[in-house]
Length: 410
Image (tube, rainbow, N blue to C red; front, top):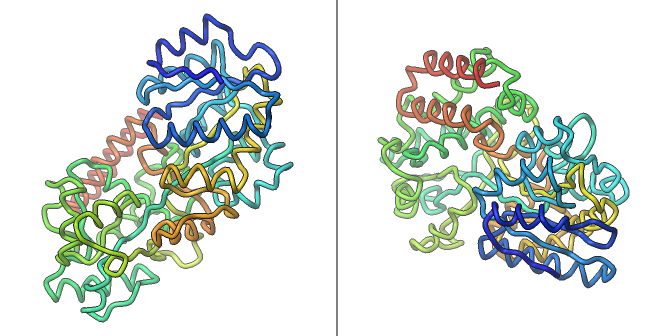
């Protein structure tokens, strides 16, 4: 295997000069998996694929993260690789609508992926067709202090009304119902995602982040009306907009707060601070609107075939291999994340097990607000959510500002 590790500019130059993947049996893969764990996971994936397919020679070009964002747009129109990694949902859509990603519905159909990758099917489908294969994601949800719940006689809530009722109990006892740190605005984006997904559902949320729905729509206002039930009574840690997400972790560890909405990457620092599987719990965000399907925030990494790929036959073989349960089990064991294939296996970690069960049975997967919305809209939106959490009385002005931005950006 030829293996390049270099800057995006140089990797692109090498690809352009050498004209790689000019014939069948030569497979070129471009990724931005330069961090240690993703790099090791892809090394293992490619090695295993070549062992199973000795007639295929793989050339793997690794780009740095930021450089890749530019490089992928360049090589899609110039000398395209046969495979490239990217992201699901609305981040995938521009490459699909511009005709730069290949329809791989046949790979899904031939390999039963609509069953084994079922939870990711909506986020991989545009115009009824599938445009890539997902291989890893991680869950978001509510982490909680079991000792605090036990002290207050509170069970894991199933509905938003139950959660708010629990919040009143915690506050009466001098404990914040939930903690967060939104100095960097993205944690507020997680809160908005779940409030909208549970109020209006997956497709509405995707349409909103894709600019198809006005921010002044009454259905959007209802999201903030529900959210205000948490904020107005003071159930969130005071002055959370002044601290970063890591600064809020001690509140949960020390029992000053009962819950924390965050991604699974929070488990390691929570345990490092003293929590254990006996004191730290996890549950899915509760239901708000009865009957709305349970969608989750699960940022999903994917592999695609560029429309100008030279070796489509072997690229599809690679996607089929990538989608297999054992392949995804092994990759995600290295990544410390979750396989998308619902027949795959995860380790003994209870949070990975809970996340795997939750995501494998989800009705849809959002990618997080700053992936689902364009960069400029994401920034303005999350700043608005941050402001709302500190000043809920400004809701009308915030939504008007977001609507003005929507009309300009999309």
